[in-house]
Length: 461
Image (cartoon, rainbow, N blue to C red; front, side):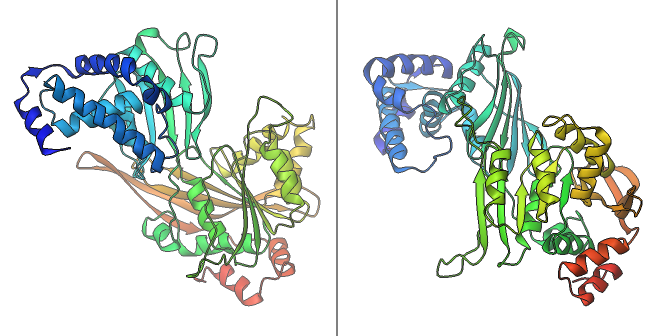
C-alpha cells in the first residue's frame, strides 16, 4: 500500500464497524465492478499462486484501497493493510477460513455452528479459531462459496453435501433442515497435507520400532499383501506412504486414490530424470454413470498395467472385493480401511465385500484372510501420539482353518497427567515370529535367507 494511503487512513475520521464497512463496499463494488467479483470468488481454492488470480487480487485490492481513502473509512484496531486484506478475503475468498486452507500444519477445519469453529493441527492440537462468522447467514454464504468452486450446491433440496474442493481438500457440509437454522451450517473440511516422514522420524516419534518398520517394508517388497487399519487421523496414509517409498526403484507401483491425491512417490535425480517406476491414479465422479471412474474401475486398469505392487488408498465400498481378488492372484496389494483392531479388520472387509456380491460370510472371510495375511493397526492416542498398536499374521493351517498370530504389540504401561496434559507411557514387544508357511512363501518370492534370518531375529536391516 502506498505511503499516501497510509496517511489518509491514519487521519480517517469516519470509523465504523467492520461489517458496516464490508456491506458498504460490497454494494459499491457490485454496482461498479461486478464483473471482477463475479469472475473471482472462490478462485483461489486449489490454484493459489496462479498469475491471473494474482492480477485479479491486485486489481480488487486497489479498488478497496481507493474506496477507503475516498470515504475516509477505518476500523478500530486494524491497520489499513489488515483491513484491505480482511475485506478482500470476505468478498473474493472465504472469509477467515482462507488463512487456514493453504497451510501445511493444519489437518482439519470443523465448523460446528456459525460461532464455533475448531482447527485441528498436525500435532494433534484442537484449537478454537480466533475469528468466527458474523451470523448464521454469513456462515452459510461462505460455505456456499467454497462449494460453488467445485460445482456443488447446498440448499433445501440438497442439505447434505460430500465432495472435494480441490485435489487436496475434502468437505462434508450439513445445512438446514438437517441442522438447526440458528446454527447456520455444520461442516468438516479435511485438508490433505501429506507428510513425508522417514524411517528415523517414525522411530524418533515412537510410532514404531526399527524391526517393525523393516518387517513391513520387506514383506511388501517380497510380495505379501497387507492392510493398514485405524480411525481417521491415526496416520494410516502417512505410514503406508513410507512403506511404499521403501520399495526398490525397479518395482512397478500403481496407486489408486479416491477423489484426491495424497501420494507423491515419484523420484527424480539431479537432472530431472525419473528413477523409479510408478503410476498415480485418482477416481473421477460423474452423474453420468458411464463417465464415472471409481476405485473398482481403476483396479481393473491396474491389473492390465503389469504392476508389481498395487496400492488402493482406502477400502470403503465394493472395491474391497476387487482388491482381495487382485491380492489372491499374485499381486502384492497394500491398502487401508477403518477398523478398531487387526482382528476386526477382516470382519470389516467381509462387510465391504458383501456390497458387491451376496456371498456367505464364512466364504468371504476365507478369501480376505488369504488375500491380506498381514494387518497392522495404528491409533492416535489421547496424548496426541500415533502408535502402531499391533501387527498380526493370519496363518492358514493345513485343514483350512485360520489362526491369527500377534507379531508385534504396543503395551500401555501407565497413564499420567503432567502439567495438566495426559502422558501415556508404553513399550513395544515382539510377540511371535512369522509362521513357517509365511517363511516358505517369502523364500519362494526371492527373499535371501540372510534377510529372513534378520527379521526372524529382530535385527535392524
